[in-house]
Image (cartoon, rainbow, N blue to C red; front, side, top):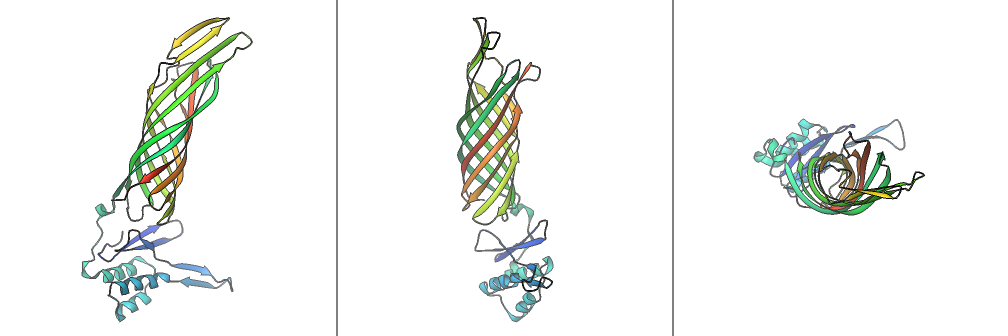
Length: 300
């Protein structure tokens, strides 16, 4: 934020191409980019042309707030697409009430809640060998977003809590040595807390395209499942084996869109995570696909 006033506020954002300036009309919720382009002519590829549309945009706001005069018109006509010129014009439009931005006013928060589905995939290798087994179950989530700049909303932090359930059953054999085993109906209830970083690749007012990444802490609860080994017709049953962890970390990534500031639709993938103690002679690994929809409340 470069300057904040009762009529207009001026912001800037620097990307890999140039520094872009945005102006926020006091009667609107989202800032608009002040348009400035330099491009080659279609008729002559060596001729550079300049589009100074930002001058028309600020002149319109000056007329809207009844501060347009010959002196201001001349200043707008001779202005360059740079901070010093644009700040002076914005302050004139704001009159004597224009004031410098204070960092605290940029921060904003937003709550949301959503529903989704998770496809949980579990497999074992080592002395216990079970191929991948997947199950798709619902997900309930809620959380809040912290905006470092609530006007542009391009980059923000997210904290999400979710509830899910996963179920798996495995069987093996009998093999050539007449050995078989079963791991029956493992039910996992999972409570997750995930801090994330979200970035809007495309950041229009009513349509946003985003990606996010984070780390997820999982707290899990299991039913009384059974592992059964059958050797030469003799069965041995072990309760709650293998021992699944009650807590572990995973690493989710998502991509999606936001429609009309309210509806967020996403798809995601959680990286393969080992969930069985490394001291065991086998390894259990899990990864997830997910998708869902969130309803977003107003930014405050």
